[in-house]
Image 1 (cartoon, rainbow, N blue to C red):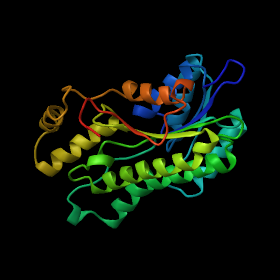
Image 2: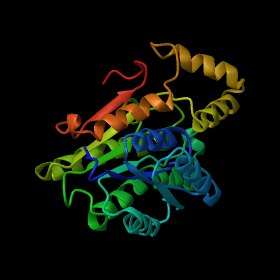
Image 3: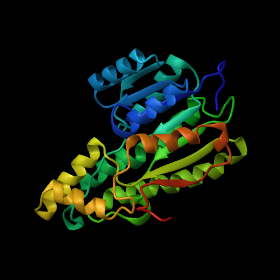
Image 4: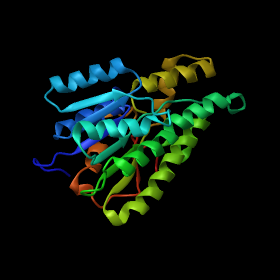
Length: 262
């Protein structure tokens, strides 16, 4: 989407590990200036330092996207550092669930705040004073999940939040279509990340089995027979920021090894 004279400026939430880190690296490799956030300041500093050591333009701050006031401060910090945004990647998220009859209000609220409300607030801030789409069509990409389309057993809060992200994406895409700014969701299935390890451990505890048995059961459901990689998910995010993807909007696109079929 950018030229050498006008590099893209991307804000990536949850950008220090897993899919977010892979996205930051992939975009940076094409010359995009990366501003990222995570909850832990030490993780942000380490990731930014690594990206800079690799020759990329990167910066970031610690920000808890669950905090209603964090979105505005995060977007303003990104604009102050690099200028108006052209790309927003809403990636910050968490797992969470269990037997629905025993899910607490605290767990439900935290999953919704992290996975859905933060997407709305950061996107709103990026549109209101982040400059996205102001000078040229922007790209807004949110990491949802195949679980937001077909549900995850023992994952009601997670599935509800990711379904909300998909609905928000489609509505906003139609709102912004006249401006040329595209809005899409990327829907990973099982991806080998630190969160995937936590998910397997949670299921192992619930089912009174081992993480290895859970891993084997999950892989058996995937037609390709393996988890996707963060880099494969990042590849689709990267493509959606390019000019070749300028007519792709209001979509929820799977990266799942065939796990999801719609």
